[in-house]
Length: 144
Image (tube, rainbow, N blue to C red; front, side, top):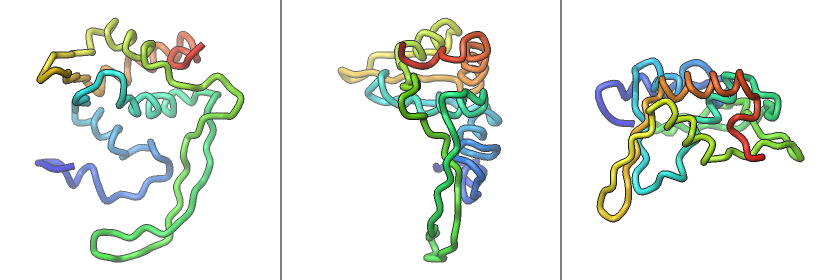
């Protein structure tokens, strides 16, 4: 991350991948945009942030531990909980369903550029629309 608020997005160890203060949380807080370059079918990790916020039952927390070395070669032990998909449970993200939710909310801004595309998505609207969809149907984001 580079720019005016880069320090707001970095250097904080989190309890979970998507807990308060994570990059996606900051994108929502600062009314940020998610930009997809060269694809409209990849890049929907923000959906997993929404799933954690909604506490979907097809994922679970698993703790990982290790040593983190920062840019100053300082090392320290760390642990984080990741929100993983349950095996043998319907849990694969359906990108087409995700795109449909974004389009329904007028939040899928796609332009053609250099024989490809650029997509712009408002992070706050993305979260709000997904939480609404997941409240209505807990499997709203996953493949049938």
